[in-house]
Image (cartoon, rainbow, N blue to C red; front, side):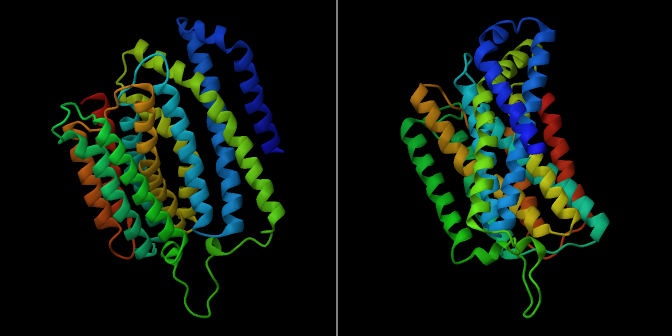
Length: 367
C-alpha cells in the first residue's frame, strides 16, 4: 500500500510540474513560493529515493550479495547523475558542481556515515568483523579514482584552474570507466566471495548472503519494474529541483558547495539508513558494501558523466579540489586504509571518522 501511495504522489507531482511548472518556476522571486516548491520537490524526490532503495533491497534479498548491493548503488548513482546534469544544464553555469557533489558523497559516506555507523555498532556489538579482502578491493579502486578525478587536475600544466583539456577529459573518462569496469568484473566474477562474510565449513550462511526463498523470475521482474517506475519520477523532477536549488543558493549568498551537499544528501539518505540498519543487525559486511560501493560507483560513473556533459554542452568543468579540501581527502583516504586494514572495528575508529566529517562541514561555511 505504501508503494502505491508513493508512486501516486510521485507521478502526480510529475504531471503537475509538466502542466504548471513553467509558471511556478517563473515566480521564484517570491521567497515563500520558492521555499514551498523546494520543500515539495525535495520531499517527493527523497520519498521516491526511499522507494528505489526498498525495491533494490528486495532484489538484493533475492539475488544475494554482491549483486543486490550493486543494483542499489548503481540506482543511487543514476539519481545523482540526473540531479547534477539538471543543474549543469540549467540557466546558470555550475563548473564545480560535479566536483562538489562527488566530494560531498565521499565525505558523507566515508566519514559521516562510517563514523556514525561504527560508533553505533561499537556501542551495540563492541567489535564487528568483516571481510578484509572486500574492503581492500574497494579502497584499491577508490584511491586512484579519487586521485585522478579530484587531485591530479590541480597539478596539470595545461590549465591553471583545476579543469581539464579535451584530451585529458577524454583520457581520464576512459581510464575511470575501465578501472570501474575491472572492479565490477572482480566483484561479480571470480572474487565475488570478497564481498560476503566468511562462512565456516558446515555453518549456515549469514542472513544477508542467503538467497530469498521467493527468488523466482516473476518476483525479480516485478521488483525490477517497481524500481524503474520509482526511479523515473526522480529523473523527471530533477530539472525543476535544480532550478529552485540554483536560485535559492544565489539568493541566499550561500557557498556554491552547498548545492553538492544537498544533492548528496538527497541521494544517499535512504542508502545511509539502510547501512545503519545493517550495522545495528551486526551485518557490517553489508554496510561496507553499501558505503564503499557507493563511493566507488559514484566516482567511477559521475566523472565520465560530468566530463561528457561539459564537452557536449561546451561548459567548463572544474574537478580539482581547493588545497584545504585536498588535505581532508588525503586524510580520509589514509584513515580509511587504517580503519579497514585490520579485522574488527570499534567506537574509536567511528569517532575519528566523525571528527573528519565535522571538519569538512566547517570548511564549507568557513573556507
